[in-house]
Image (cartoon, rainbow, N blue to C red; front, side, top):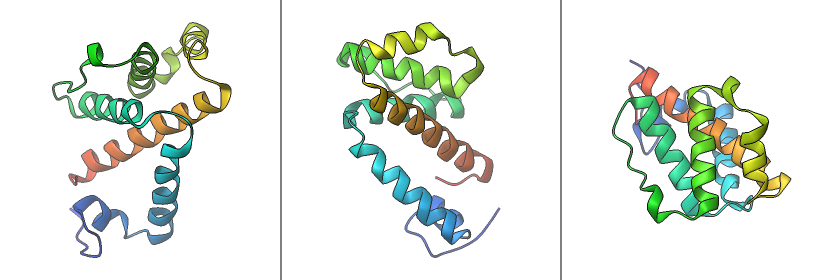
Length: 126
């Protein structure tokens, strides 16, 4: 729907129509991987959110994940589907595996993964 050709991907091309937002989002997105959460966990959270929002098959095999990563993925899914449904129990489970700073990173990551996929779906860009 929106055409631009300044980015390497269709997502970047369209998002770069708002250059300041695109740049800041990119910086913050890149910083997620330095917040103490393992990359495999973040990747699984991103993949689960992406699949749920797009109504596609879930590519995440929870059996291959650590208990901490499984907890994070389930949290990220709930965040994307119904953040009002998050309970004290969800955060208690996260605290069994993660520090407060890591939980803050996980919440921010979930928000950013959700925003990115919804932007992509709404504008039909990947």
